[in-house]
Image (cartoon, rainbow, N blue to C red; front, side, top):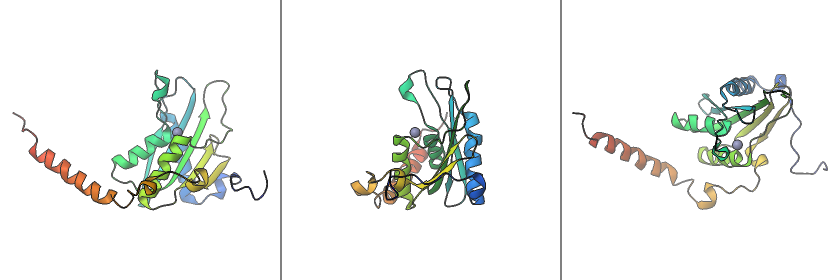
Length: 188
Ligand SMILES: [Zn+2]
């Protein structure tokens, strides 16, 4: 690796080196890891997203007996923001740790490939360059990088030309749901 290596990750920061809002966000991510359902891996991950309005939504990983049916913490947190109708995400923090013996909270946890893809899409729709704060469980090592850094040359909604189309489609969707609700059979 050379100093001109464009793929090199930034040096990890200490918690105290982050601005206060980011300190709060990474702490929320670690807190959220307590809600992980991780009986198979023994590895708990928490995530917290902050939207343009300053609201924070959290999530944790949810495993399943069918191993492929796992939901990552980042997906849970992004879904929580979307469900609240507050989808203009500007930052996401991720913190993870192995909580079964031998415990390990020293490794920095970065989003998996699928999560990077979802974070990129959220950023393109919101018109934000989402900052990703990847943390170890001790919150002693925090790597701050943009999603563009973590997922260069991304395939996204811009590639398919739908970034500008979605707001109008979303209005149509809301109108359709209101109409369906208004027309639903009344309870007897
Ligand atoms: Zn993931």
